[in-house]
Length: 184
Image 1 (cartoon, one colour):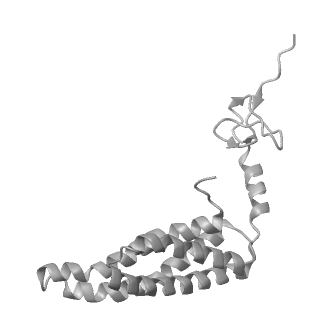
Image 2 (tube, one colour):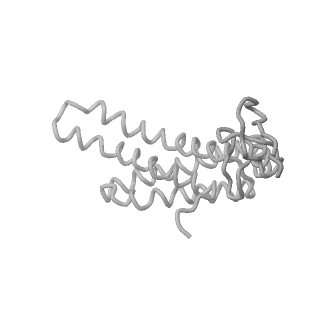
Image 3 (cartoon, helix red, strand yellow):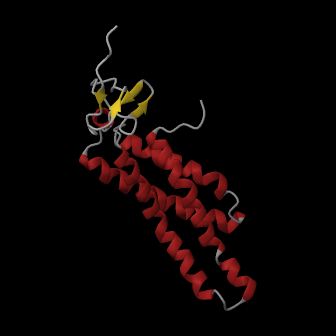
């Protein structure tokens, strides 16, 4: 009976291991191993595999940011109208839908090309589109704050609805773009 030779991690040569990358067959220690659905892989193979899925072109980032900012500015304006008439309760329901619509619009405009950086660019665009409305509603509220008791707190409500809109729309748009699914 022969004893198999001792393997050492290709990154940490002083660490013995029994693991191998299931793609390139190099020995890897548990610290270097990345668990995938098909087994353990080295970080280089995982990085190389992810590059296959990053299909976004340079101008897709500009399109995604602009579309997200414009869509979010429009949705923020609608949030302002809704919160004025319904005290903002519909914001809880409509904000995730607005984020999903923005995500779908971006996917159509970039023709389904994907990249993690593209998702973050779109999320920043949603925030950038919502910030003008937030500042527009926050400035009068902060100027009125402290002058009259309860009325000054009510003046902060439109800004609070805008913050709630951003908190619900940004992750919804990101999830729509990245393909994250919460259920089957």
